[in-house]
Image (cartoon, rainbow, N blue to C red; front, side, top):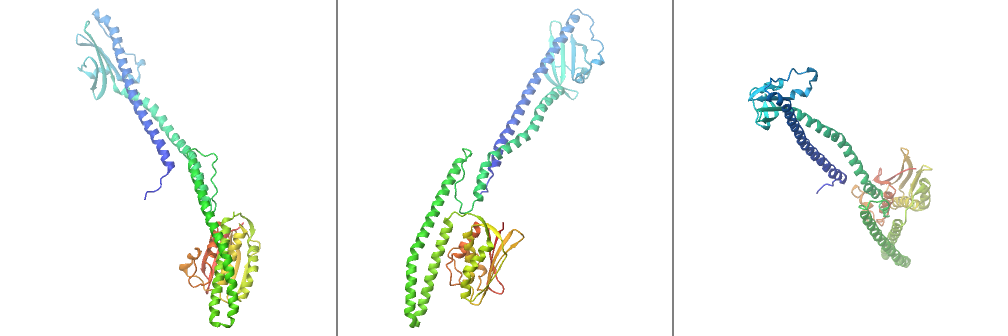
Length: 447
């Protein structure tokens, strides 16, 4: 399986690599051009120097006058002067030369331009021959001076390039990051959404390249929302349609129970039938509650969880009294959280109702609401019932799953509870109670 790649890195590479290649090609072209021009300029200078020397010496030589240039002025010396030299022949005899060419000895270059290696140095030599007056002018120049000029020219190009390339790459990185910011923003927006939020993504100020993706996502959200609505509508309609025959069946079962009061062999079966009808009716009610809860627009507000739990306990305590269960409450007053009151009421009611349902007569249930670490609220319901095995603790949150050793329940209560907890960013944890039973902890952030 191929790993995901970074669009940002690829864009930076696709922009940076051509710039780097273009810079290198430009520097190479500049080097070749600079070298060619330096060669041309210095060759022209050699030709010009040869012509000047011929003009200076031609008159004296043609009159057979003794010729010498005199002593060099040390005040006019230059650091590059050691790289330039000349020699003048008359009738194949050197009549004068510059001091630097003394190392040439009896070496003679061919007419025109030529490259020579003399005394370990590369020289560019130009020889001009005046056949009429039998004068040969030789001017020479070490290649060092040309190399130095080329290096200076290239450094003038390379140093700014080295200085500005990192700046250009940083600008490219910042630019690509800004260009891709809408994509990152959309991704973060979708990632932050809860499972029930299928509202369309805002399309204002979007680049043209991203707009089709956003439109496709919005159309997908619409289709998912329609699918959910159809599912909820079907569940709602089915639950409503089942309520009426179940109510009639329950009435008939109650009538049969009265008629079979004197028939012990039928009473047990009728009791099971009545319990099954009650379980089916409870499942239908749970389905309706779950469907309506998922279909409603969940609005959050700051509410008093302590008061909410106390109210639920007040309403449900008669069931515990009927089973002779000792229901104890330890609720810290004034604890507030942010959430939906109806949804959190369902959570508390389901958990306490399950505890009463699965705790045997004369058992014990403890309900507590308190704060931990100043910003975490813990709702704890523990009972002395049969408990749940470790292997089934995660499965009980699935729809219609029923614990093997429990015959009661619809398998929807804890599924609905988990859905509401996830909606509120709360965590629900099941653990064993000591010495027996189940302990349920719901943790949620306080306000």
